Amino acid sequence: MTIKEFQEIISEKYGQRDRQRGTPATFLWFIEEVGELATALAGDDHDNKIEEFGDVFAWLCTLANINDVDLEQAVQKYRGNDHLGFK
Image (cartoon, rainbow, N blue to C red; front, side, top):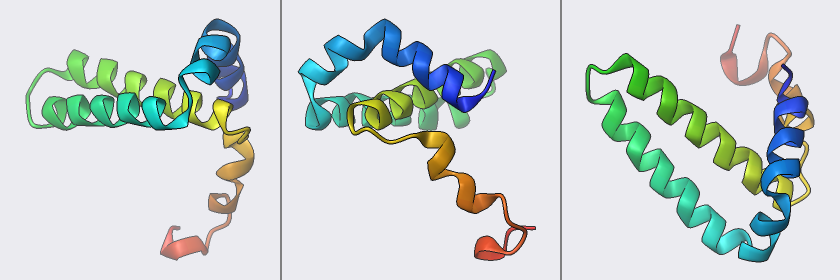
């Protein structure tokens, strides 16, 4: 599955409700999930880490969707070999 496909699934499943909630409230949900990921990273439960990474990515997609941002387009700058020193 591509990033775009996943972003579309999130939009189809939750888009109307997410747009009604708006960016500020959605961002708070995103931050809560980032906090849960931080807790998971401090632990030893690999399955929990997988779950929390998924939740963070889903909420990032939600934020992108309600702000009309295509995440595949947003990450294109990282495809080059010399951006920010990444190889």
